[in-house]
Amino acid sequence: MPASAPILNKHIDRILVDQKSIADRVRELAREITENHPDPSEPVVILCVLNGSIIFLADLIRHLPIRMMLGVIGASSYRGKETVSQGASIWHRLHTPIELTGQHVLIVDDILDSGNTLRLVRRTVEEQNPKSVATAVLLRKPDKAPPDVQAEYIGFDIEDAFVVGYGLDYAGEFRNLPHIAVLKSECYADADGD
Ligand code: 5GP
Ligand code: MG
Image (cartoon, rainbow, N blue to C red; front, side, top):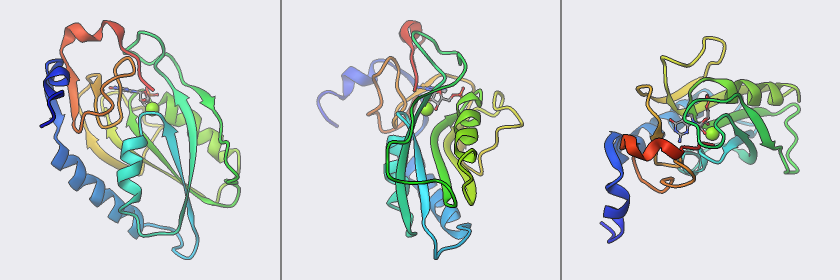
């Protein structure tokens, strides 16, 4: 345990998903994605929704023995000091030489909450006429996710709490926690997610 761990841990109220459970589930998701690949002779464009999904993405793709390319898109639905979705917006469009037209696309996001972000990202992707589109999320808050926004691959269903860790932030911090945790309620005056 690094000497700095107590500094982060003192803000944690409880751990919802521990490090080992995440690692096991990410491997299972990768196996499902590999098995369901529409055409293994063709590559998949894996589209990472910044910023919260970078850790999930990094772990997931190293368990995917398939042809793939990587793209990123920036989208947020939490702004300023909010822990309630404010309506999604795209703040960074694809700046890669990767064309989505005619490609198999796998959108990778950290969490499906109100669904506003994934609805917008999926629509943005579909406008480019990809060959297929699927979505993988590490977490879903099932009580809030609307029926019209589905993810084909879901790591864990969690309670409706604002979580941090494994890429997810609170006011820009806590992305480096190895588990998914809920902070103590007094911490949440200044929450921000992306
Ligand atoms: P949605 O648009 O589905 O409401 O929210 C999706 C985005 O908001 C996620 O990609 C994530 O960046 C952020 N978000 C939603 N719920 C949480 C949460 O519990 N914690 C954090 N840190 N971010 C969240
Ligand atoms: Mg996000």
